[in-house]
Image (cartoon, rainbow, N blue to C red; front, side, top):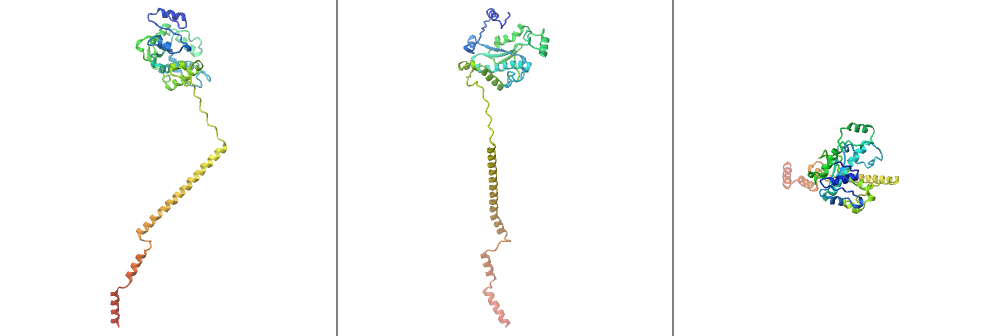
Amino acid sequence: MPLDLASFESVLEFSSSTKRRITFKCLDLQGGLIAPQKASAPNSKIINVSSSGHKRGDGVNLDNIQSQKSYSQGKAYGNSKLFQIMNTFSLHSKIKDTGIDVFSVHPGVVDTGFSKGYSGLYKAATLLHKGFGRTSDDGAATTLSAALDEQFHGKGPLYFSSCKPVQPSATARNEEQQKQLWIYSLGLLQEHLDDTLLADVGETLESIKPKEPEPEPEPKPAEEEGDKKEEEGAKEEEKGADGDKTDEKKEDGDKPEEKKDEEAGGGDAKPSQETEEKAAEEEKPSEEQKEDEAEEEKKEE
């Protein structure tokens, strides 16, 4: 049976006629985000319709996140789909204990009128796909598989293409960029939120405040810079003086060693007083020598 999500009448007709009970709820910020979803049915799902075009996105650049500096049609579309997948991962991490799964899907190239506003190369590309794209029924198949197939219950977060989970781009899986986008997105809604609503996703008004950039240090006056250089110069001079004193001490410490060397060598060292006395005694003739000398003198006479 056809389903036009843009028509509330079509949604009611589809819901009442399907064999399997499907609950459609329009969530408003005043009524909370998670409680109605959790109460709607077991194995509840939140599904973001993304696109394989997310691979053309260049990631989270807060300076140009809304094309405030430069605009590229393809890149803007790619980023919008990339951000859906990123927030799929972020939201699931916040509510994973609630029993709600968060998925994102690529429905495929569907032959619809969504590209009417395109121009140039993008218009030409969509015209080439016309007649080869999927019908609306086929395009809805991946979304319905993610929502209804029991094998995927409790398996979030997942990204689907052609009715099966596939790996999104590396940028979509970048956890640091996911956090940046999550805080930025909640910051845009800050005036419509309060701590009660944010408690559903484990946040508070304080936690989603954007971090203010750290102030740059004020330039110091030229006089202070000059004083600082003089102080540094004085410290260097003191270090030099301390080094000279250390060298002098080292030289003084070498002197006793020189004396030891002189005593060991005996070459230039002066004889001690005891040594001189011994030498003098050895030079004196003994009593026997004196008697012998006297006898020799008598014989000569």
